[in-house]
Picture 1: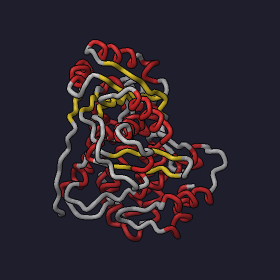
Picture 2 (picture 1 turned 30 degrees about the vertical axis):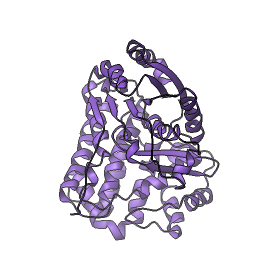
Picture 3 (picture 1 turned 45 degrees about the vertical axis):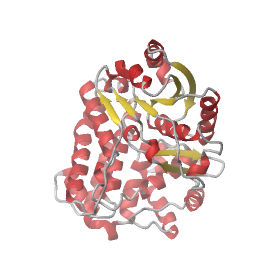
Picture 4 (picture 1 turned 135 degrees about the horizontal axis):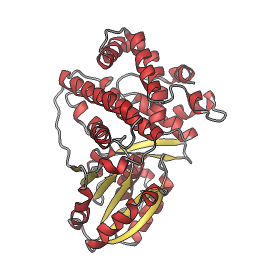
Length: 380
């Protein structure tokens, strides 16, 4: 078991009605707010109007940038930062799913500086200042509400990349499961798959910590218990709450304590599919994970077998475990092959080239470039 230091500074407000404290919470950080949101869902649901009322009632001045897409783009980050800088905002409020929260994190880092936001991703600049970030979550999936990570695509340089900074932890995150009741079945399933994939990345990371393994399996089992019935009862608050809490725990740091790292090679590979074909993030992970396990079966067979056995409650070997996990993803109606999504004219060569540009690799299992074509062929 590895030494570790743990600090998570995000305050979570969880449950029905927690938004009533949104305005007073934002008052702690100033009175000028940049509200960042997605393309239209919060307006259709009426949440946008509710948020504005909470803020106006608290005497806050609101500026807005909407239109963040599900695979967020660096140009939106830059445009939103211009709005925030011009209006001298004191904080950034993200209302949406993980893509909106990720974008808000980078926007908050970019507003105080004069260089392009992509410089953070390119490693040219280390963030040393940032505005406070507050999140109102509307989709349970990424865990971005309680971690410092942000992932954004840059189509010009053909990269989907991540940045992380202690400055990027949200100060407060509001998690009301009622706000997820309108999420459709497919994106609900992708969120369940995403949180399970986060646990799997920790499972296949370097280092040995039995307690973290128990936490990983516990979170996965919670998703397995609550997820399938939720997909047939999308208005079930209790099931929504269970999945929302599980998604937060899956990537708030606790599953990797006592370990060297997670692996993250599957996420890096999945980002390529989102970059090239706009594949939803959770769907990209269910496509890549079975293929990745088949590719690394000889090296990670014992871990694969133990994971599958823990998830299924049966003694499985590595091959049986991979098949079982793949079947579970299918039971969520998630794709396990790229062709399941009917992507028009996907190209193995294009995918491999983008993987080379992105230097796709894992932090524990080395995904050397010579293995890229084999991985793609396994999930193609």
